[in-house]
Length: 85
Image (cartoon, rainbow, N blue to C red; front, side, top):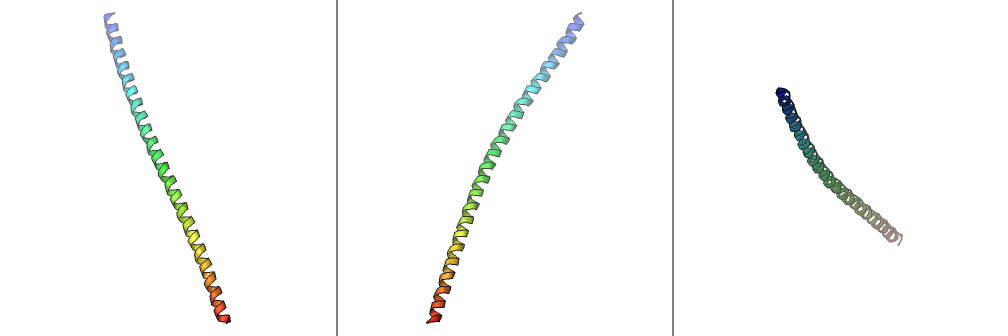
């Protein structure tokens, strides 16, 4: 009987040790997931900032092209008027 109790104590101790390892692994996994989540949030913010900067650059380019087209049209009109005189 004493031998059986000793074996049960050993098995219980091993089971508790295994449960402790599982708890530690769970904590580490949560920490890793939190770090990944933070990294994703940072990356998402950077992507949004880059998209905004890209859209702003495209808008400026469109405005510049429009100004250039307007100026070219005015120059052509002035040249036409000078040639008509």
